Length: 72
Image 1 (tube, rainbow, N blue to C red):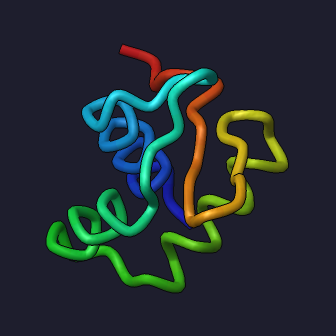
Image 2 (cartoon, rainbow, N blue to C red):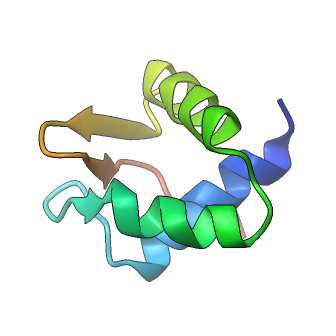
């Protein structure tokens, strides 16, 4: 798995206004990522990896909170 997909996820979550206090809708973010050419399975794998590394937290209702912003 490349860093590109993880960076793209963090970017899209940030663009959606996701923070630790404000979850983003994964369906909306996922749609944008698929339009960028990423595969759904790869997005899911990256999200699970990012959760295990403390970057995001997946919550109920297909929502995710962004715990760490992408490095600039």
